[in-house]
Amino acid sequence: MDLKIKGKIGVVTAASQGLGRAVAENLAAEGADLLICSKNEKKISRTAREIVDKYGTKIIPVACDVTNKSEIDNMRSVMEKEFGTCHMLFVNSGGPPPGTVDAFSDDNFRNALELNLLSSINLVNTFIPFMKEQKWGRILANTSISVKQPLGGLALSNVSRAGVVSFIKTLSDNVGKYNITANTIAPGYIMTERVVNLLMDRSEKEGRDYDEIKMEIENMIPVGKIGSPEEFGAFSAFLLSEIASYITGVTYLIDGGMYRGTM
Image (cartoon, rainbow, N blue to C red; front, side, top):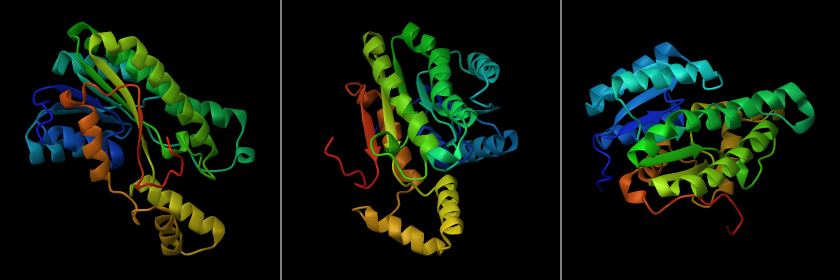
């Protein structure tokens, strides 16, 4: 399927590995040029080279901590210099550490909100003016299944990601007239480095074998497996594309059926 985004410009954050990289690869495979960022300059530069070698599009790497507004502003400056505009924005950041509510201080919750919610707001506010001016834009924010079904032991993530959904839904009401869509994607268990680390953390805390915990999770998922970054990336690229023009203000689960609610 042609997503009709060849030659369009995308910004993908936290893209050196995992879900962000999967989105970047799928967009590049469709012919999009990209600015990609992560905090680790060495890793994001290597990722950019690998994507260029594989797909041949223009990929510009930038070291950026999305909790730092000045670094986001610098990313915008690089984007303007290299591309002149932005059509697609994939809003993504790392997850806060696992733990229960009573394990964290007020500062821990503030830091989680900075990481997940406020970074999303700053990224959108930084790049959406280009979309409004050209009357075309796609915004997709990455959250978690926890925005619909809070997960045990992930108190900071449960709290900080829920606000992203409200922000994006509110945003979608305001920008539809500019031919801009704004959606949220909520992954369940996808086999990234973060999920591996979460399983290892549980294994250590509970004194159980890693494979036992992994199988326990897979048994909770109707399709019987943990998802792949490639599956996540393909669906995200569709939501960021021209052909998804009538989809906005929605939170999409990509969880193999793990969520037990009806809506």
